[in-house]
Image (cartoon, rainbow, N blue to C red; front, top):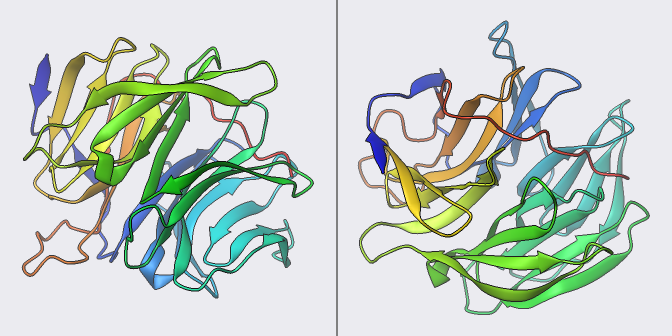
Length: 286
């Protein structure tokens, strides 16, 4: 196992309350990321340093590029679409009092797998739902507490998933039609090391997971062995994604929510240059 504690850089110094959801958009050469509780969608262009900020009308748990341009948003009340001309419309609206959208990911077939959770984090109060481009919704998991990281192996035959309070990263088999079965643990986070939050999968099929209250991001092999740890000075590391033109830089979002004396970098967007080699992520087919 390789460990390092000084390899990161600050991409964007910020004070996001709940920074989340880094996603590389190859069409624009920008990184998308969020501040969920402040209803903000950020972009960052590493080539120029240019940043943009867009406010949403609701808490936003995830944002992903769309195949035809624009963005898909996992909002408090459902799945929304931003068209290239910035027109907003609902793809699937299903408000549930006390519940909001959380992390989401796009599968190899272009469907969006979007999670939800209750604001009070009540056990079993969230879901994981698959949305196709026409807005058809299929609930995959209906007994989730904090639906978080979701990702697929490079060959698309496995899906990885974290329901944060379980302290596990689980793995599913993916059928030819994109549906999943055979849920089983890949790895468990030991007591005192934090909780699994957002995750991504690299070109070697290894799973990188951000550790909430763990101050680190870890890499697990496809067999579940821990083989790399990157330690960070901020305790609440929320998600990770590969970006940059060669997909070799690992971007990390962080949070300051709930911290009485947050580290100066809590809420910032961090990056570990040359951390590995990512896999190009599909855009939402809607």
